[in-house]
Length: 347
Image (cartoon, rainbow, N blue to C red):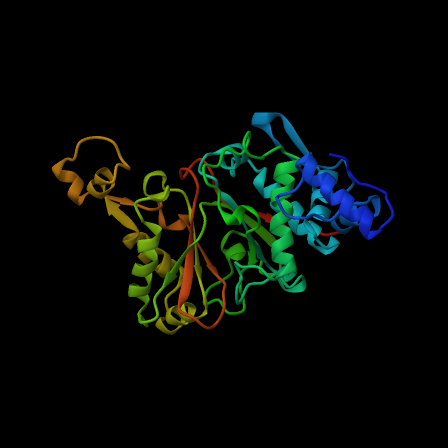
């Protein structure tokens, strides 16, 4: 893929280039912004990078990702230069050994990349953490997540039907980026829990099956609300009940208030979710999710959706109105692919 084009900024030229990019397979199926040397340079400058700076590697493929490739795809996605440090941090997280990029990106499971932004930069860039946080309409959310996917496709060749073998895929593979609503949260922010300072800006990347919305408008009780979420976390068709990967749980405004009024700490909520997000071995065998004959002990032997309470990543996001929250079940097994939090570096 050519780094940039220098044709005059004329609508006819742009339209012709967009069609060319479609023909070359450089888009995600939606129109892109044709890059120029100037626009790519602005992206690099915003992140304090040179074009040949190494962002990371996919060792299983002997593939190296340099800053110029990220910059080109950030332009294609429609990012502003100010978004570039977030995209770079996300890509560094994806290429961290704990994320296991090759497995997550090429599996038939079709995971999306959830990009969760914390810290001052989320507010500066107006990354949506409130109403419709997981939906369309906010440029920062849409284009940052899209830049990650386009970089995966164009720079790392993660495209269907070869290195992306998703059986179905999910809509989050276009873009799934949002910020935590730290001001409204009953708990400390996600990045602080994961070892960063409150004043630092970070990106957490997570391989998600998709998101499951949960609805409970009657409960004003913290434990029953946890039971509702736990049921979604432990559904028998999810990878989680067998593989026990991490899970992201997103509590929105009305449900946040339930926990705030009850005085439940993050640790208490997480323990309650862990305790109830489980199925018996008998349930899993009857559903064909575990092998072997049904044994009497299977009726009373439990398998949890995650291996330990700490594998539940709790995030506050979403609007104030509506008794809705969501969980993002993780891809793979608990040891194969882990969420990675990376500091956002700015010049």
